Length: 76
Image 1 (cartoon, rainbow, N blue to C red):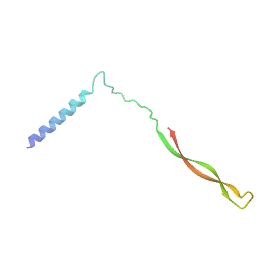
Image 2 (cartoon, rainbow, N blue to C red):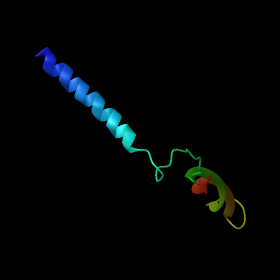
Image 3 (cartoon, rainbow, N blue to C red):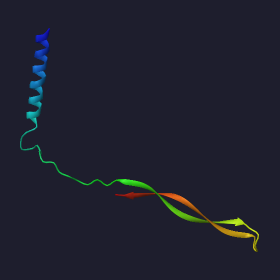
Image 4 (cartoon, rainbow, N blue to C red):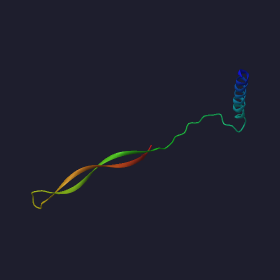
């Protein structure tokens, strides 16, 4: 039983070495290159909205400002 396990391990080791030897030759690139990737990033951008409310002046409408957030996508 122990001999079969050793034989299986030996066959697995030989197959790993053979598979790594396949990636050689003139058509295989072994150089690593760095490259940039553009990513879309979402962020919340605040802006103000003017709203009309009722008040005790003439005319009975006053303006009020409210801050809301808008989702903006940036490429980075």
